Structures are given as structure tokens and as C-alpha cells.
Amino acid sequence: MQVYDAPLRDMRFVLNELHSDDGFGALPIHAEFTPDLTDAILEEAAKFCREVLLPLNRPGDEEGCHLENGVVRTPAGFIEAYKAFAEGGWTSLASSPEWGGQGVPEAVGKLVEEMICSANLSFGLYPGLTHGAVCAIEGHASDALKAAYLPKLVSGEWAGTMCLTEPHCGTDLGLLRTRAVPQDDGSYSVSGAKIFISAGEHDLTGNIVHLVLARLPDAPPGIKGISLFLVPKFLPKEDGTPGPRNGVTCAAIEHKMGLKASATCQMLFDDATGWLVGEPHKGMAAMFTMMNAERLSVGIQGLGVGEAAYQSAVWYAKDRLQGRSLAGAKYPDKPADPIIVHPDVRRMLMTMRAYNEGCRALSAWVARALDAETHSPDPEVRQRASDFVALMTPVVKALFTDLASDSANLAVQCYGGHGYIRESGVEQYARDARITMIYEGTNGVQALDLVGRKLGANMGRYLRSFFHPVSQFIEENNVDGPMKPMVEGLAKAFGALQLSTATIAQRGLKDPEEAGAASADYLRLLGLVAMGYCFAKSTRIAGLKLFFGAEDKAFYDAKIKTATYFFERILPQATASFLAIKAGKTSMMALADDAF
Ligand SMILES: Cc1cc2nc3c(=O)[nH]c(=O)nc-3n(C[C@H](O)[C@H](O)[C@H](O)COP(=O)(O)OP(=O)(O)OC[C@H]3O[C@@H](n4cnc5c(N)ncnc54)[C@H](O)[C@@H]3O)c2cc1C
Image 1: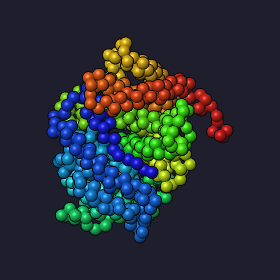
Image 2 (image 1 turned 120 degrees about the vertical axis):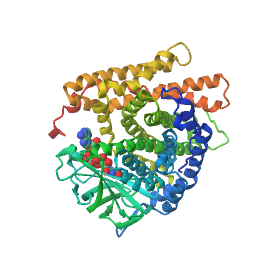
Image 3 (image 1 turned 120 degrees about the horizontal axis):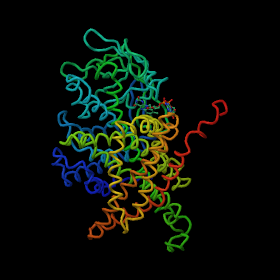
Image 4 (image 1 turned 90 degrees about the vertical axis):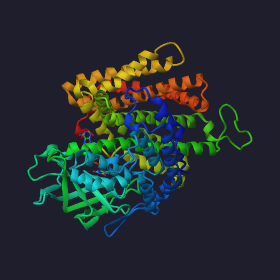
């Protein structure tokens, strides 16, 4: 059974308690968002997710989307749910008030995003992509385009997409063929075929605004010759309402492994009218604004599915009676004990729980940096926050989604054979989570981004935004006391990370294949250290709260137990990653291509 209730207590912890000393400081622009107000937002969002989105998750997966005469119909209930979602102000939550948004901190917005993805990942994609499109238009479009499109996108009246992928061109966007020809009136005529476009066509909104990568006639070849265009499904009339149909059609929808209620479309642009966003041939820079926003969002999608899978597994583990506890019957009045008594089932549940809490803590840190990079009055803080976001974006995307897929599979395992059967609902999580490792840049590509672009950038400045707080924490807390084993564990993993960084920098300079061969393990190692740091901080806070007699004893006690599990059973994987990095590329590349 799909079970989900937003983990509000943990969300409040990461929002209000965990990162208050992160050096980004309080932001005057967010002064009105007191814990009382953010609590109310989170509670309302939790209610909407529980009552409206969750009940549509399994039926949406069963029904999927339909393409009829070029029109895509979303599953039953989606139109009404989307209407309620937009009317409730959820599409405009974290957007700027300048365009009708509510200006809620990203630190809150990301928690709401997590809830939406837990309750119904397919549904979450529609507003999620729109939010990314808003970021790109806001950052790069002309004032006229902003005025015409942003208010409608922010209100949820219209939706957005990102159109990059073509049949022959996925990761390597330099191969892109879609063309854009300048017209006398300043617009462009866009023609080409795009595939795998999420929300390319649907029945939820009055218009769909495509952000399309294409080449101008004089474009240099490769990635440096790509420009970004805004191409609406309906061309707006003078009064801003949708007018004539543009030359954009949906030729087919993909039949896919999961995420079935999200329409994945093959889109044809045939002399479609569009407008340039940003400068000619600088489309990748503009699109990266959207891609970076989406990469963080996809990480949150992973966390969302991981949490839903965990909660469903816990529910089942308490309900399913099989065998007796190895320590003797724990529920002698029942014909058998619930499977939650078995150590191996505990291993699975604790692993999922630790993944989710660790990822949530890390994502809350990144979300605070997102707010600080835009709104801090101090330029030094803005720079540091921006460095941290740049470093962590590939980590959040790849680590969270790898762990989500593991969690979803562990949930299936907790259910045994029933997990493999559709009615249980957990196999949907495994299918839905799987795509998050692939789209928005595969996780392999995220790892390359981390080692290739982020490590050496600005003489290691991005990395310092993370290394400094971790080494400071270790220094300050490496004293005798209950925290000592954790701090020592963190120091060991951090040492391995520092050594690995030096190794990759040294070897990668001479041989880029060495950096490529180390990249996935390096991302995992950095992610484990980041989660370890968050867990160690959480433990320190929880310990103090318990010492001073906090009311919420059960929460803090569980936090320390989960952190201890992470340190004893998960963080040791850092050593394996370190050894793999140290081994270098030789065995990976030794076999000739034709020997496979
Ligand atoms: C459900 C779904 C929704 C999607 N939504 C959108 C969307 O809204 N908009 C959009 O534009 N696209 C979308 N995509 C496309 C998605 O982003 C691409 O599938 C993804 O970027 C990978 O491209 P590809 O499938 O062509 O794989 P390829 O690029 O062919 O990659 C195949 C494998 O090779 C690896 N690889 C490729 N190049 C390298 C390299 N240089 N170094 C190391 N490894 C490499 C990859 O990591 C991968 O493992 C969607 C896809 C799906 C399935």
C-alpha cells in the first residue's frame, strides 16, 4: 500500500534548527517567514499532498496519458487537482513577487517540492518544469518577454517545458540540429524534432511555453553554436490571452517504464514562431539556469520517492506477520511476529531512513545557500553561497537519485513477492525513481561535471565553500565525549575525500580519462561526507536538546540513533569509494573495445 504523510517534524528540524549557524546569516527579505508562518505553509502543503495528490498516484500510474488527435489527456483527476494546486497558490510559492509569486524562501519551497514528489512524482513534473522555465526567462529574456510570460507561468495558468533532446542528440547537445531563422519582425522561425519532452503537450493549462535549443543559420558548429528560444503553443494576442495555434505539435507520447502520468512527448516544431532568449549562440548559458534549477529539483524528486517508499515499507513491516524474532517471540499473542523484528528487515528500513534524513538535511543546506546567493545583503556571502550551490548541484542530483532508486528497491524487497505485484504500489516507486538517475543529465554526466568543472573551478574556490565548514566542525568537536566516535568517523572520511581530491587533480591533469574513471566514486564519497557532516551536526544539536530536557525527546533520540546507524553502517562505504579512486583507470580501460 502506498502510505505517505509528510515528515513534518524532520522538515521543521532541518529548516529551523540544523543550519542556523551555516554562515549565510538571516536574510532581511525573509524576516516575515517566521517558524509559525513556515509551519502553516508546510502543514497546508502536507494536507494537499495527502488528500489530493496521493490518491491520484496509483490510478495515474495505471491509466497513464493518452494521445488523441494530437491532444494529450492526463489521467482522470489531474485537471481538477492541477486547478486546485494553482488556485491554492502552490505554483507561485517560491517565485518572485515581481511576477505575482509569493517570494517564499527556497528553503521552504524545496520542502514543499519534496512532499509533492512523494505524493505524486508524475504530477510534480508539470509545475516543476514550469518553475525551471520561470528561472530561465527571469534570468535571460527581454523585458517584453518577461512581462508577457512570467505572470502567467508563475500563476500556473500556463506551463513551461525544456526542449533539448533530439533523436540523435542526448548528452552531447553539440550535435543538435533544430534550426531557427530570423524573421523581419524580430521573431524566429523554429523547425526541428525534439524527443522525450516532459509535459510537451497536456490538458492542464491554457498555453504551454517551450524553451527550445536551436541553431541560427550562422551558428558555429558544436555546443558554442546553440541559442535558446521561447516558443509558445498558442501565440499570445495583444491582450495577452492565447491566440492562434503556433507550429508546434505532439507527434507521439512515449510508452515508458514508469512516470506514466507524466506525458513524455515527441514534439515537432514546423516553422514555429519563437523569440530569442539571451544572446545569440549563448543558449547553453541561458539554458543552464533552467538545467541547474531542474537538477536540484530532480534530486528532490529522488528524495521524495525515497521517503514515500520508506513510509510504505515501514507500514508493511509492522503489518506483515512472518517468523519469530531471533531473540524469542516478541508478539506471542499473534501467530507470528511482524517482520519489523527481523534484523535484515531493520537493515533495509534503517538504510532507507538514513538516506532520506541525510539527503533532506543536505538539501536544506543547499536550499539555504540558494536563498543566500540571491538575497544576502553581503556580497561575500552571496559569492560563497553561489559557490556552494554550484558544487552541490551535481551531488544533489546524482546522489539523491541513486539512493532513491536503492530505497525504492529496498521497499520492494521489504514487501517480498507482494512488492513485485502491482497492487502493493511499491513497484511503482522503483519504476518512477529509475528515471531520476537518467534525465536532466545522467548521473554519470553529473559526476563528470563535479570532477571536470567544479573541482578545479576558480582555484578550488567551490570546494572550499564545503571543505571549510567540515574541517572547522571536526576541529571544534574532536574532544572526548559522546560525539567522539562520530567525529572520528567523519574526520577519516573527510581525509579520504581530501586525498582523493588531490589524486584526481594530479592524475586528471596528465590524463583526463583518470578523472573520468574516478568521477562516480568521487561524487559518492563527497556525498557521503556531506551527509556525515549533516548527521554529526544533527547529533550535536539533538544531544544538547536532550541534555536541556527538550519536550520532543522521541524525535531527538531517534535522530541520534539514525545518525549512529549512518556512521556505523553507511559511512564506511567511503573507504570503498576511496580505494576505487586510488586504483585509477587501468582495470576499467584495459579490455579492448572489441573484446567486450
Ligand atoms: C521520461 C523522460 C523524460 C525526459 N524529459 C526531458 C525533457 O523534458 N526535456 C529534454 O530535453 N529531455 C528530456 N529527457 C531526455 C533525457 O534528458 C536524456 O535521455 C538524457 O539526457 C540522456 O540522453 P540519452 O538518452 O540520449 O542518452 P545518451 O546521451 O545516449 O547516453 C547513454 C549513456 O552513455 C553515457 N554517456 C554519454 N555521453 C557520455 C560522456 N561524454 N561521458 C560519459 N558517459 C557518457 C550516459 O551517461 C548514459 O549512461 C527525458 C527522458 C526521459 C526518458
